[in-house]
Length: 387
Image (cartoon, rainbow, N blue to C red):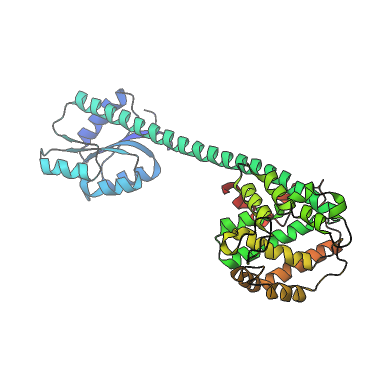
């Protein structure tokens, strides 16, 4: 008789009656099952630990622990094993107890071998169906998770590519001013710091981080003679310059991306003033979108502390801070200024980081890699897939 290997699924016969063990072993072996027969609970538990037991025929009355006592241990040690209990007492309460403890069935002696063999076959078929179904469910769930990840990654790539296109257009507008493109990155970082100190949740902070570089995209539609004029603009020129807000909104409107929609809102509202004297619509107070009020502070701070074609001199950070503070309640939202003040040290650190980067000529030309891969977007890029 062939000895079963440890990786074979076996039918374990646990019975202290040698004649019954031999009878069951012979019958079930003829039925095509690989059988192992043991006499006591210790041998049985060793078998569960060392072999793959598909089904166990366990007598209730055993020397040492009873079959009922080891049934819970079997369920813990080998939860995929189907257990059929065997006893010489036809007692309904015992049968119910066996089933409650996890047995598949309950057989009383004397039993017919053919009937028991059929019971074993049905029990093993049911077990195989349950395992197949479990494997199918696990495979299905695993594939569903994989597909969901693939879809999320694809959506993130599409959104990143779309955002890159818009941001590169924004950079093109800045190049007209002789800027390397770092202006929109600086404003983006400053605005994100202000938004975070304002108390906005992480996803909204990230949206402002990505949307704020689009604030001046409308300058693409402004003639170079106005954008590059070294002196003060006359009334007609200033009227045209102010149109960059509505031009920017027009460029961005109709997009499916929530980030680009927010960029449109920022483009059209970041020159509105708290007291209603701003442009293009003269909105006042909280009628101005919050993102526009936040970017307004970030944009003015960066403009004041940077060289411009129309102004060769620029302010120190502390001077710019005081200029902005003096305009709180007129040009700027007091609550946004408070967030700006709270994040002041982080804003200074960001400004210094950009200064060091510019000294080393680490700029971001329009033809460079996607801006979604730029270090200034990377720390928060994970939020892009959910926007």
